[in-house]
Length: 163
Image 1: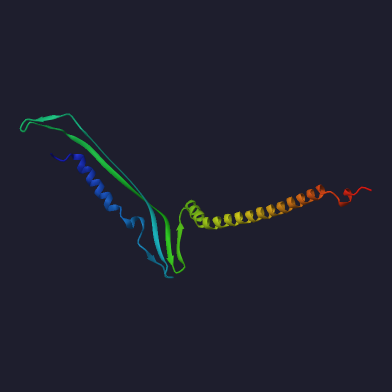
Image 2 (image 1 turned 90 degrees about the horizontal axis):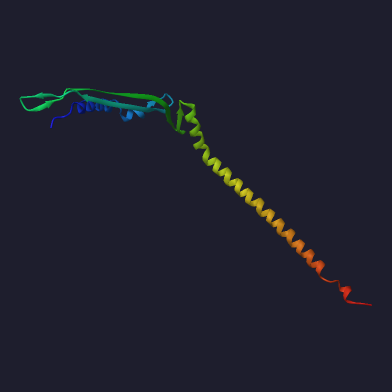
């Protein structure tokens, strides 16, 4: 069976898109700065693809007895590449510098999460200590009340003797 014309259109378009999109498009080639730091560009990539076609009225080929179907179609695609950040690698570590400030907020939240967890744990420990000291004071207060009540309930030694 013969290949349909739209298959050729799709294959050509996809091969061209594949040639344009590679890993170096997203994570770029590193560039060394004069201070020895490596700067690596990071990009966002988006692409789209569409293909379509239509067959028109049949014409009959009398020589081989098959119908000839005229075909009309097209395909297209597009690629969008936008730089989003730079990775800076040096002796101090790795740092990501975002070009979009809104993305930077998420990175700050991730960096701040361990500090927030430690703070919450410390607050819980402090709260437990306060609760324990309150319970201790309450226990002492209840013991004193109980002792006072027992003291009131005990008869005086003088009351046993009648003169």
